[in-house]
Image (cartoon, rainbow, N blue to C red; front, side, top):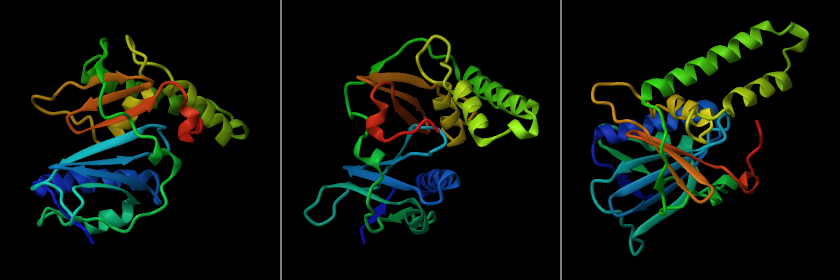
Length: 225
């Protein structure tokens, strides 16, 4: 089993936290791992948000496994989490699994250009809080016989498909970033940034990114749920 030596205990803890959050939304979650040099990228797709989540980690030394100098494999998020040793700053790569459809269609590595108009982090968090409050209010107003899964899904789609003012970014991408721990408030907080590459959008923060396609989403096997 390949052992990854991450840069430090903090990187290991952040990786474990990310995997735990993915498993909160999908107990059978899979993640795609890509490592080259001293960089590890972990891709996941929390089904509630219809986005790809990307968490990177620094490796203590360049990835090397025999003659292989790069790693690209899809594994169980739960099995990977079980191998994370925070004090030792290590994680072992479990056996490969059959990847879900999204794992075969990742965002491009290059060609990203900045997109203007993204509000600051406080405003983004306020948009998410307002969306959550509106969803709860509208759900509570429904008569019991009308509070069906289909109606709740319809309400959620309406709220979270709205775009952040000044951009074409759906608010659900911001909601995902916050729910996955990518938008932590603190002193000297780095402002999130928005990028595009072809049909892809990427919301990048200091703690991770979320990406989604603005066209041809059907190729990802993404539903409207």
